[in-house]
Amino acid sequence: MASIAAAGHGANVLLLDKGNKLGRKLAISGGGRCNVTNRMELQDLIAHIPGNGRFMHSPFSVFNNEDIIAFFEGLGIQLKEEDRGRMFPINDKATTVVETLLQRVKELGVDIRTNTSVKTITYSDDSVKEVVLHNHETIATPAVIVATGGKSVPHTGSTGDGYPWAEKAGHTITELYPTEVPITSNESFIKQKTLQGLSLRDIELTVFNPKGKKIKTHDGDMIFTHFGISGPAALRCSQYVVKALKKFETKTITMEIDLFPSISEEALFQQLLSKAKNEPKKSMKNLLKGFATERFLLFLYDKLSLDTQTPASTVSHDTWRDLVSHCKHFKIEVNGTLSIEKAFVTGGGISIKEIEPKTMHSKKKKGLYFCGEVLDIHGYTGGYNITVAFSTGYTAGKSAAEQVVHK
Image 1 (cartoon, rainbow, N blue to C red):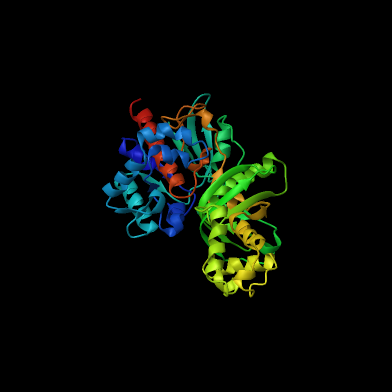
Image 2 (cartoon, one colour):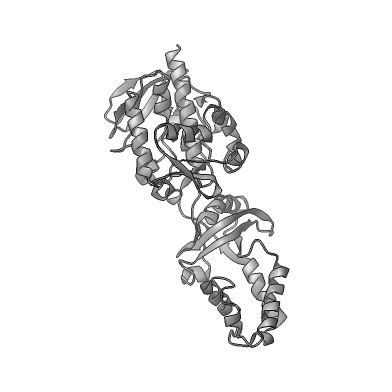
């Protein structure tokens, strides 16, 4: 997007990529469907970028989510809107998005060099001087846009290459950590894989601090895995787990699953009581069929040592309350997340205090621009990170071209 914007605004552009093909990360995004952006109102969009989202007001004033939609539709990619504002190509193929972008890059006359890895950027006292390749070739240039990504999904090429180039220019790199990443737990039921593969839909997941105060709640779907929990709600909670473990210097943090977020504990209890009243002869197990996912219920019966063959009429109020309480407050002690390499997104990066938000220009060196995940900006999954990447990329490209062309 940066090279398209720069070439589109009249600059001569050379695109360097160390990989053998462009757009590798884009091609696997959105589960291979490519969630190109999110059609939320701007304020909502920024609220879904918990890592320095406010910085995005300026880049969005140059190129926002509606501009991204218009851009792709202008290139002939029809988009469709799915739940929570997520925008996908109608054919559900990320490869279409990649191919169309590359075609546009080529149409604009951008010089592309793949299998070309950059060793460093050389600076004079106050500005960019040249790019040095690993084969010792040097390329003189008045402007460089660093769009190298973070450290997540390294097999696509994002291995943190951009951070040392930024540090060399005098930039601060804030501490890197995994976000949008599966959460790990040492609970016995996780280790024994009792619930492995079980999906829970439309639940609420909450992260608590050691004093039992809520830090963050997210709703959505989740899944139990052989190492902990994953799925959209878990991924969104992951950065709060990472930060809480660090902040409170503790080995574990409590999380809680609410299987029935739309109904109160008391109402749920009354619901079960009236069920039991209406069908007193039914066994507890049969009465509760369909109340929650069977596998989860079986786990609870075991955990609470319940005899599920007893008639519903003989089940005590305390037992019903206990059952309801476990469905509304299912606790799980978690001890961290998978590594930054296994994360969908990198938290931390080049400090945004040292970047001009309207241009993505470095405050340290003239002609140096940054965009995308190399910056200390991150969003939840759902098209937000890609929106940040396209918006900052376009803004950087346009600004760099204006700097070079109007000199």
